[in-house]
Image 1 (tube, rainbow, N blue to C red):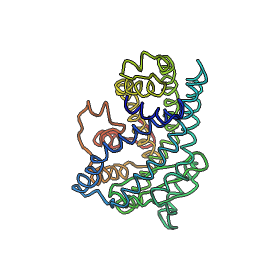
Image 2: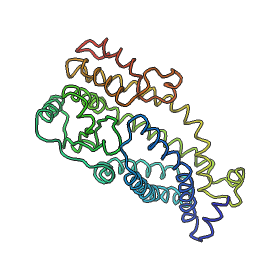
Image 3: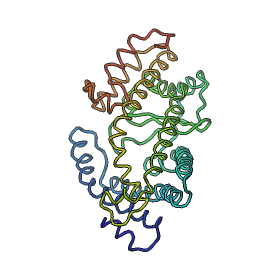
Image 4: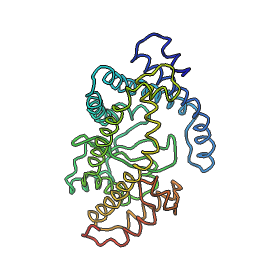
Length: 335
């Protein structure tokens, strides 16, 4: 309530007060979590040999993240607050559509604007590896705008590779640490797995689920967000849409925990499908199995997590299960 009173004291109206309220909460949350982030980065990650982040990089990363959160989060929150204030019973629908468009916008600007703020992306030098990647992508009718290396070693020794962009604007990004640790064939196998996600429409299926989930959330929000007794139940002196929005997000937390079971199950199934796609299109599974073992070793991932923990929190199958699936793979047949 004190934060709300402080936000209202500036006299910027419902939307302005909401932005200040959320901004102050975000700042408080950042300050409370900062010691734990510092400890995780400079003590735990350092202890296990992962950390390569300098104090300067750490500070700059946090400053950039805060600026992006204020700009992008502020824009989205402004739209949501405005619609719930002025659009009546259809506000949830407008908020839903704006959120979908905003998510598309972020997906398009992230590789061009956001990611280069944190890392350096350099075109992969011409050579055998680049030729093999282009040949494989061509055989799969998978258009690539470019192949890039990223200075992942600037912050960590962990390995990774990923795609960014959509359609003709897709780019391959390889961590420099990945290139150091894997052979060319193993890198092709890892990229074949990622291409599998794209060819099997996993990204679009995931986005479709996000659209459905966000629509349901906004509709449920619309049933409670304007009720004064809801905010009063949480001890607010002055009921407001932004306070109700915050408290409803808290109430959704336990629900999301159980919804995540379904989402993680689907994600793990997608990983198996992408693994099998990689094995089928490269003609063998050994390279991907070896790459997964190296990735697990270098990243010190848990080998045998508890099944319940996997059920709730793992978006990827445990290594042993992925290897068993790949080793039983029959070339030419997706399991």
